[in-house]
Length: 375
Image (tube, rainbow, N blue to C red):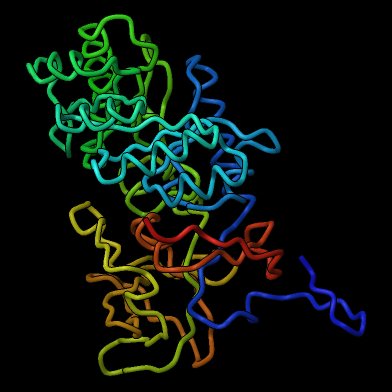
């Protein structure tokens, strides 16, 4: 929003005002992404419990829920505490609980927050049982990370220690899918594993599944009580690479400034290295390798085949992708461009907050939204 100075003048900030590199959020694009998943889940009759680990922003949560805070997912206790302070009281902490953090979780519950934690071992179950903290059991559906297989005897032992609220499944391997059929199959497998594990535990109220790819490609959510997704608000090049979105749907980017050229190497140098964009190379194993990010003009128009090819700590190297027949664009020193991220979670984590513009392509900054930091 415009800033009113001490003498009464209204100062409008533009994309040329903040010091680069900075993180830019297109509010209208994020709102469209939110509406897209909301409509899809409404059609399947299953509510969304947004995972706010990607955006880590109270203001973004308000884009999702408006003035009525709803159920959310977080990945750190710092997030849980910040969102609780903002009025969010139905919180799932969806990382396996460390026994040393159980007391912190219990204190949040004493403040009136209905915090649920996650576990997959008897040791964790014993710790949360002593503190009276409710939990979901993590179930492994694809070998992506933690969790128990649905037929693991440990599931019965956990159930003898606590009465779980339910089960949680995350189809993380869906990020490696390469077709609509593979994405749909991942979504159905995620659902089937979660429902089978819940049936084994008996009558549990929560059957929680979720990843951004499976949320967008599920065709049947019978037996599922909630879907978690987080990346869907911002999207990124990995999601574009597997067909979940297009680059035009990516709502966050890093704005950098051209600081030099190495014409003999086909390089354009910027002031944004991996400290600004992260070292994530999530598209390297996809059919189209986007380097450290895809380059666009400030209005969002892509430069054909121009990517961030390399990065050191505070230097970015832009250049044409291998095999390109395009000509390197003329970008004088001082030109600002946007770098679309490979992985929105990793790139946004490099920054303290978002410079926000209300309309994609606008040159005006409407506000600044801080991000939650720490663990």
